[in-house]
Structures are given as structure tokens and as C-alpha cells.
Image (tube, rainbow, N blue to C red):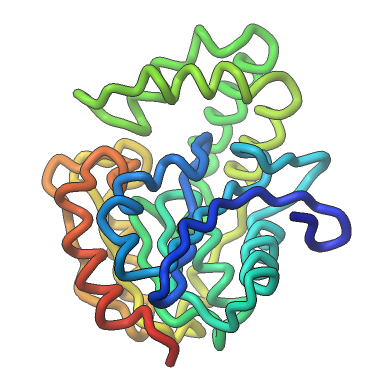
Length: 261
């Protein structure tokens, strides 16, 4: 579909008669990241998995930020005829979900975020990400892809299929663009108090991208946050790598809070 002045957005509407739930994937991923949740929740909810700009089958033809991606997601809800939806986001998807709740608080009934942060990127880490992106853009992904996968998936997860997607889709200026958005995002810490929706925060104890204090910042700053859920040995992309541990928490939260307020 085309939204916001010509931006193409790809999404998968998994159908169902329950309350709408928007699924927002992590950096470098796409809608297939949510297959474990689709399998677990599809009977109870209308699941809508969106490919964010520069990922999956949604192009990024020029500079953008996560506020733009949040507007894209809201436009998908408009297209489908939903006034409200719950939102689940992992890592980058959490960045977008928080911005959706700030842009349209009346439309986000509940928000669950996993392995994410409301802060701007640490400047030293941002510089490292840009360096990795430049190496990837100039020389291809082979020099850095295993290290990036280790940060994202942790140990013991079979990620060859995702690495193959990364090699195919993230080349040259495209990888520079999406890494620049990640590294240059703005902080939301001063605005968390504006988000009145119930929020569930989950974080893995083995997250190699964001320390647990980023999750604690979220819980402390969000007026209606539930107690922090930590997943033992959970990796950064824990909704995928640790779905069996994550899904019961998400399912219970959605059962209570996903319906329209």
C-alpha cells in the first residue's frame, strides 16, 4: 500500500476477529520475525505484521526517522479501518511503538516492548555502528555479519536463514541509511510520562545491545508500566530467540489490555 505522500509500506494481515495487534520487528528483520507469535496468538487477535522502512519489502528511498515509521504504521491501521490497536515491538520495533503512542495516544490501547530503549544511542556505540555499516556497504557483509548476528541473536540460535536475507537485502547505500537512522535516533526519556497506555517491558539478561538499566528506565518513566519482566539468558531479539518464555507474558498482557479502551 502507499501512504504518507507516496511511501510504499508492506504488511501482512494475518486475519482473525479479535482486537487488532500491530507487530513491529527489530533492526535488519522483517515481518517473518513474528511467526512464533502468529502461531501462538492468531486465534485470539487480528495480527498485523509491518515491514518497517528500509526492511523487508518496504523501501526507503531517502532519509527518514522512526517518527516517520510510526506514521507509516498508523497509516496501515487507517487503511485497514482500525481506530485503535495494541502494539508489540522488539528493539527497533519498540522505538517505533513508543513513537506511535506519543503521536496518537488515543489509538494505542496497549504497548509491549522487548529488548528496547527510550534513550538515544550511546555516542560510542553509534560511532561503532556507523563504522560497521561503512564496512558492510563498501566490502559486503561477510566481515561483520557474524558479529552483528551474535549481538542480535545471542548464542545457540540458528540464524543462517536471517543472515541470507541480510546479504540479499542490505547493500551499499541501503545499509548506510538504516544504520544512520538507528544510530542517530532521538531520546524519548523526557516524554515517557505522556504515554498513558498500559505498557509491558521485557528484557533478556543476556542482551548484548542494551543493558538491563535501559528497561528499568522505561518502567520508571512510564506511568502505567507493569513490573519489568526479565528473561533468563534472553538475547536481544528475544521475541524470536526465546519465544517460548516470552509468549505467555505477551498473551496474558494482550488478553487483559488489547481490547479498545
